[in-house]
Image (tube, rainbow, N blue to C red):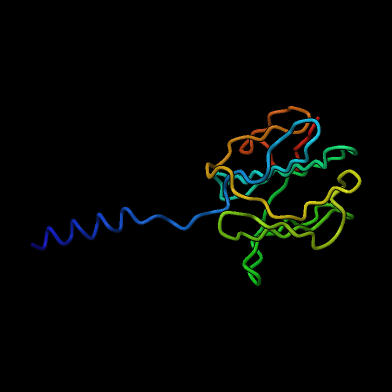
Length: 155
């Protein structure tokens, strides 16, 4: 009887799912010539670092776009994640995990995107898999584990 109870307990504990993380792919991915699109990929590295790639385009008629690659840091006061400025004039972004979506808010600065393009918005979850790489606006494949933010180049 004891063995049966212990086995049942182990089975229940073993099947419990860990809390969902941020990792995955979010956004509205259209990438056709006329429609706006947004893409957010969040990667949990083997070293415990959270990296992200964000890309957004306005679509017709302006076709302006922007992209950013960086590291997220937990803000212990708010419980949200932040992208902190690397250089003077960079933007500071807040990433709020709300169920099956990420809400991005610009807290300060300019991300250097094209005219009228901002990061602010709500991005629905598209895929829960931890992305291994991102493909930039220029078609370059960038592996998260091999590319720290300071080494990222879009060209």
